[in-house]
Amino acid sequence: MRSMKLDPAPPAHEVWWAHTSTADDRLLRLLDEEERARNARFRHQADRDRHLLGRSMARLVLADRAGCPPEKVTFDLRCRSCEEKERTGAGTGDAAPHGKPHPSGPAQGWEVSVSHSGEWVVLAVSGGVPVGVDVERVSEARDLAGLAGYTLAAPEHAAWERLAPEDRVGAFFRYWARKEALLKATGLGLSGGLRRVLVSPPHDDAALLSWEGGGGPESAALTDLECAEGYRSALAALAPGPLEPVVRTAGDTAGLLRS
Image (cartoon, rainbow, N blue to C red; front, side):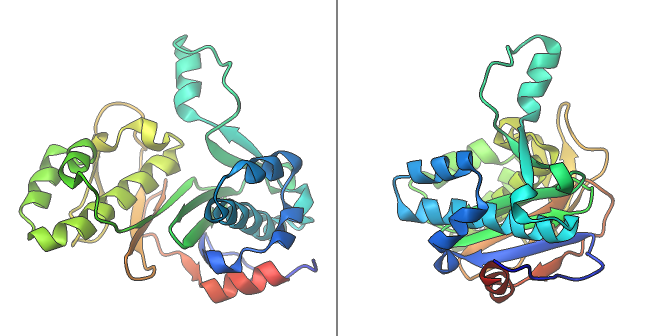
C-alpha cells in the first residue's frame, strides 16, 4: 500500500467514518499477529469487518501523523479501572491486557478511540488530548424501560419519561452515546458506571452536567456527531470546550483504505 498524505497541519480533533462495505481482506496486512488472530476468532463476518476497519483506520491515520510506516504503529491496552484496583490493592494485575488502546512507538502521544455499531465504524484521533467516541444503532429493545433504569441517572430518567413514547427510543440511544463517549475518554469504559455520568437532555446541546463519585475528569467537552439515519453518535474530549472536530466522511476513509 502506498502512503496517502493527509493535512500537513493536523486538526486538534479528527473523526473518521467507515461503512462496513469497505472492509477488504487486503487490510489484514495492517494488523499485527495478535490482532489477526483475534479477527479470525470472530464467528460472524460483520464482527470481523468492524474489527478490521477499526484497527486498519487507526494505523493508517496514526502512521501519517507520526511519519512512519503503518506496521510501526503499536498499541498498549490499558484499563483504568484495573489500574485503580491494582493501585489500591483490590486487584491482582494478572488479567490479560485489555482496555483503551494507547498508541505507542512512533505514534506515542496521540490519542485514539474506536467504536462500531451496525454498518458503521468511527475513529477519533487527537493530538495528546484523551478522546472517546461512541456510535449506537437505534433499535427497539425488548426491555427499554429496564435499560433506561440501568443507564439513566434520576434527573435523566425523569426527563426521558416525560417524552412522547415514540421519541423515547432515539432519546435513550442519544443519552447512551454521550455517556459512553465520556467514559471511554477517561479510560474507564462502561465499568465506570453509566448512571454516575449526568449529561444534558437529548434535545439540548451535548454537555457533561455532573459526575458522581470519583474518577471524573477536571474538564470535558462533548458534542453529538452526525451519522446515518437510525444511529446516534457522540465525541468527548478531556479538555475545555468547545469541541469542533474535523469530520472525514466514509468516502474520505474509503480513499485512505485504498491508498
